Image 1 (cartoon, rainbow, N blue to C red):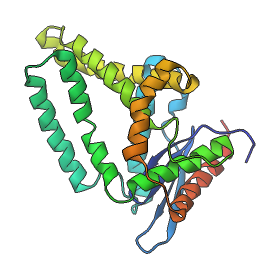
Image 2: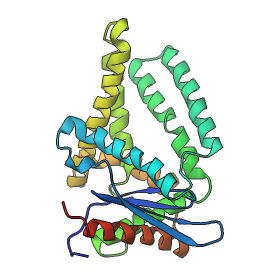
Image 3: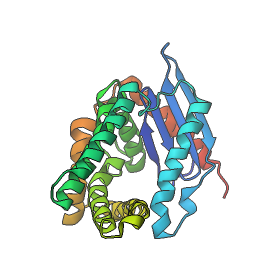
Length: 260
């Protein structure tokens, strides 16, 4: 592999780690019999080629979501984080609570911020069960160590949890603006606001990673860091780190062999 560092992302699974770069992905899992299984593929959807600021964020989200069915087909043993029955039940329950909150008599800004927090419940429940939080920590340690050249902690400065602060604010602002639209156009306005919130949040997140010492950046990152530190990650075992590193190296091998 070359000495140039490749920008990587990742996702923790219930029994492993998914690592992806600009052009490839790799997933490693620990099977029920204790074996390590790794699969790596080139990406079909390349979000890195999208340069429009309004489309970059939604394209990256779409790219990440598109990987999940590919991972499951290539590696049926992979335990996707939101596939547990308890998490699905939590998603349905949250949807009901959100509908009731939207009808509740309260200040619009408070309502929007509260609904944003409630929408995090399924993700929080997913992290509390099984080994997901430990594999999340393993993902961060392996990618962070590769990027910095020294062993890194279980929290990572580019974890998606850092989107929590920007997403809460931009979603609340977008929904408040949509409420000012005539009722017959409100559904479309909320859809546009949702896409706009994703686009704005990812651009803000990019600015945060480039300016980590700025007071505004630190304030916006604080909710995500606390979520990582207290709930989202646990210290991984050596066996879990082995899984994460296997996914990392398999992804880098495909990235190194990529010829644009």
